[in-house]
Length: 98
Image (cartoon, rainbow, N blue to C red; front, side, top):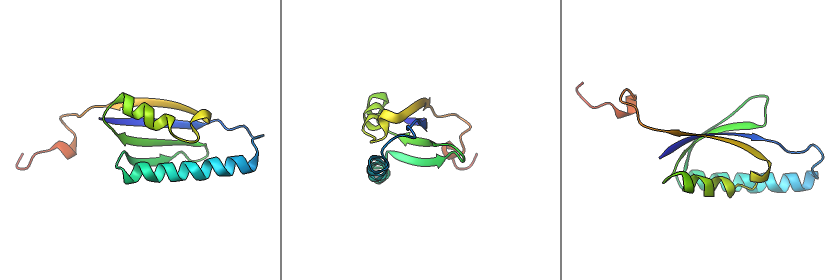
């Protein structure tokens, strides 16, 4: 099942810089794991904001929740999830010889 996930970070400007650096480094490691596992299929940053939109492909909503809550920055995230379903006009679903 595919999900489009929009994440806004809400990190206090008063956060200890060393702690922030450590959390961001851990976030990068976790993100790479998700890419290697094929669970995070695409990710885009939102210019001018501490925000990203990512496309996840996982077994279902519970699996997505487990993934999102495993992110080191999870405590500082505002997350919106849009479940996606196949559409008959999706070019990737087209059959040969139409």
